[in-house]
Image (cartoon, rainbow over all chains, first blue to last red; front, side, top):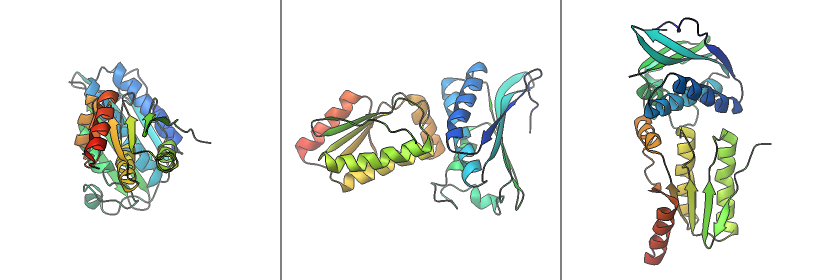
Length: 140
Length: 123
């Protein structure tokens, strides 16, 4: 995590266990993005990135959680989401970050596309242990 | 049971208006229902209105492209209408340009596009 959670505003944890959870996560990220006053385009990008990553957590990670809340750094505010699973991990991160590469029959845009939509993107994966992806969108 | 989106018909055209954020299974149901309805009702055009959608991720984007392809194979034409500007920007940045998907700014322009295509005999 490259920025601390905003003091006094605890992040909330949402389960990613079935596809219906993606709808709730998109709603939660939308609410946070609006509270944080992200621009409409930035809200749309953040929600879309979260949707891609939550689906990855579900399909490739076998489910997990997302922690979402607001963050602060140097007087700036932003929305952060941390996707965590204890799935098989990603053996070749460079390959997984390539546009169009997929191991699961998708379009292969999830990771690479999500990275383009946000300001901060951090991926930690250990084969056999799991994957943690952190994204932040800052208010301009 | 997952939800199903109603498919309306006007003449030879099927119209679907997506009014709420969709679960993945609902998206897949819509894809199948549209294929069924194109054949069952001998439709030559399909309009999918996504004006109410605040985001279109790669899953929904892929459904739109797949419906366009399926309808082409079934001798019908699909037009996606009402995409919000922020959604268009996000889709392109995500890497989905929706090549092969015909679009129009609103329902009226979408219907006009289908009528033009029908009268010129182009598919």
